[in-house]
Length: 236
Image (tube, rainbow, N blue to C red; front, side, top):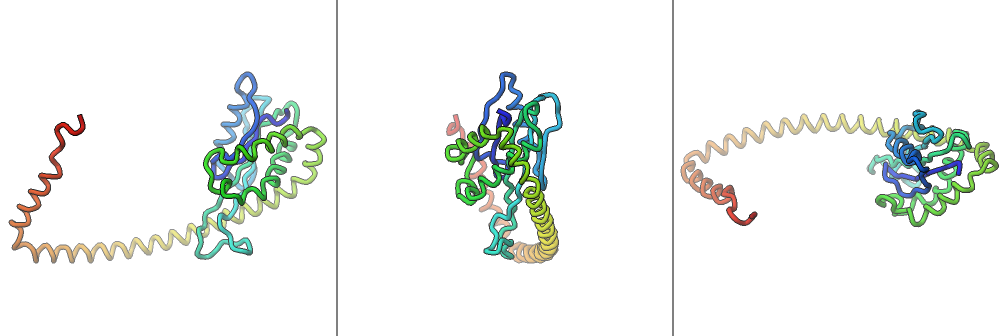
């Protein structure tokens, strides 16, 4: 097959994958390499020629985790960005990088309705394997040259729009982080004031109870003795 391996992941967790290795383990190594690469606003690809002809490529979709009815982040909600990753390893001797990109763009739209399912949004590793891996395998097998050409004609503009949305979400999240940092600094200042006052109150309380020091010291010594004596045989 021109596409040797492909997967769909959420926040680094692979939900479903399909494919097979070659006799030299090159597909597996390339898949691991592309999967480990950090997400960006768009495409990532392997640049090493060591495992040629196999090359890896992936595309990211940055999605607001809990938008309101109009698709915008709720002011009082969680500003988490959910990152969907669509990856594949392809044989560069049989197909082109553009064709691989077109294949992943198609997978992105095939999964559009599924990404709202609980086992997709919250599931652990391979939570969608049983339900989606057969579809993924079928899409890989049907990615012949004719299908590649038809996909390539539509994927460019679609991915540009998604990348623009990704950048907007990333920048918006960065602005929210700056707001949180400012609030954190204010809280730290308030915390220092509170700590200073608490220390003053504690000092006054200690002085007030100084006359009971001997009795208190004896009681505390007895309690600590019970706590710190290690067991002799319980852990043997």
